[in-house]
Image (cartoon, rainbow, N blue to C red; front, side, top):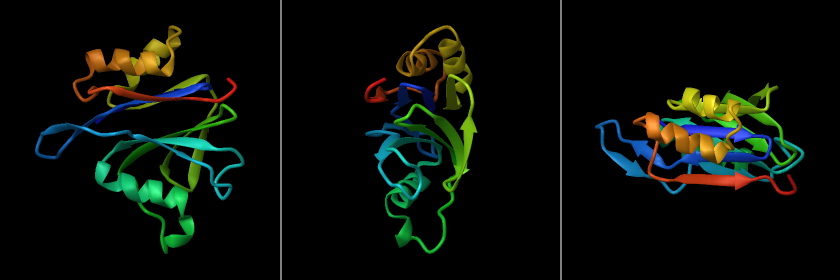
Length: 149
């Protein structure tokens, strides 16, 4: 699947995707940035883990929710880092669950990433560590640093 990790200052994700037939390929990014006050008061960054066929609809919904008659379904899990340093997780784009801790991760390599961050790693370093241990994580890393933090 993937590994996506977040701290109050950074969100990072690997670029590897795996086709249902087993073929592994490299994605451009599993993180997208939004500035839509319909959802939150500051810009926020969304990382997605799971079935990549659902990613475009979820990202489209965060950009233009008025274009959707019904909310798209995510086959997986999402993680959000806002520009004010707050972290959320979700499986439905309109129901965000606040993560009240310094770091969080999702995906098949989440336990490796959580362990790395518990020992002081950045989100980027945590995904890099997960890529060494999780066969579903790799092919490069994308990261976004929170401005001013």
